[in-house]
Length: 293
Image 1 (cartoon, rainbow, N blue to C red):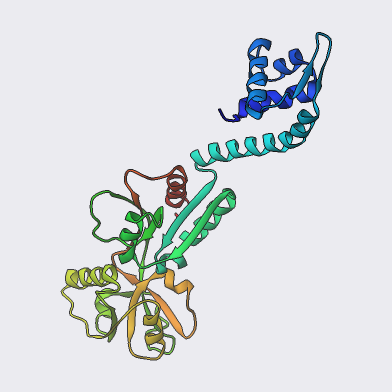
Image 2: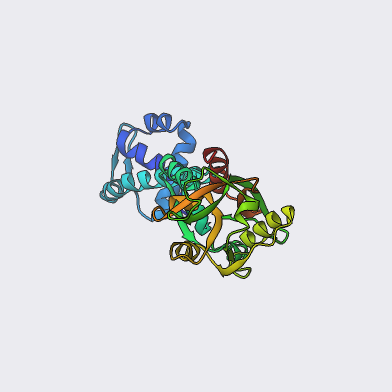
């Protein structure tokens, strides 16, 4: 036998009312089953909690001690049940999210802030990780949601697109083209470019390869790097680079970011285990899909 919340509610009502009829009505029960709950509680603790006569009910000394503790316990139990129900609705509980580095500078960061503000009881734990690592993190249950760049994933992981952003050409501000309003891909390909390392940034490497192949361009790739080191290489004059617009929020002078005409946009996905998305995870993904537009 264990102390359940119904038994505790009956005891607290009886201790406050000192009248079994009124106490039973308070917890929406008839008196016979109410009295049975009290008897089972007394059996559980092993001592009488009430002295009952035909005319009165009063607490025993043991009952008075229990009443002092039970009130707080009842509040804690009710709070526990509320928290449990809210977690089932996605309104409370832990939510672990891995964020690709470039996504941290996109409007998704603002959407995450709004989600956190609207759901203060969700324990949002954000970690930064390369998209290449996120599938293993999901399968190992180290995270609940991955905010990542597109990549080939095995079965059992569901994805949804939550954001698209334009690609831009980044130059030093003293470059002859720095004051242009925009530039097309073919023009960009005439510059010495800093590309992406396949091992660390396969998505951006493949994205640029597709754009170059579409126009039949063979640009001079003078160096391969990763974000954000790539921006430093542009800054010191190694070459220009094609980057997602979100990076323009990360760096300003002495760099200039020019819109790149006819460029394929970069995409960001939210991923989770197909069969195990929590209510909080589903709620977050829905917010990101709508809130980052």
